[in-house]
Image 1 (cartoon, rainbow, N blue to C red):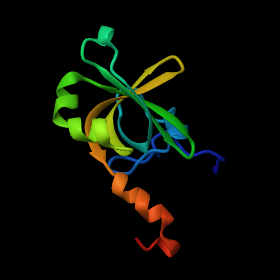
Image 2: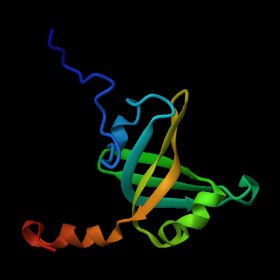
Image 3: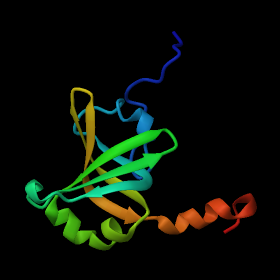
Length: 121
C-alpha cells in the first residue's frame, strides 16, 4: 500500500544534513547532522560552560547545545564560523528539539559558491 508520507526511518543520516523542518522525524537520541547559518551564539555565565547556537537553513532553525569539552575541541569553528555543519545527538522534550553537538565543522567557505554563476566557485 502506498502512502503520502515517508516512513519515520527514512531521514538523512550523517554525514548528510537533515533539513531543520524534519528534526521531528528521527527518534530521540538519534545521531543527526544539521547545517546552517549561525544566527545566535550564547554562552551565559549561569550555564556552567555550555554554549548555545541557533542555526538557520532554508526550512527553519535548529538549536545546538555545545558542552565545554566539545567547545574546546572545535573552538575556532564555534567562535568564527558563519556557516556550520554540526553532528550530534537529537534531544527532544515535548516540542523543544536540540542537537547536542559531538562534531562541528566550519563550512563558511561554501558561502562563496552561492555567488558564483552556474555553481562555479
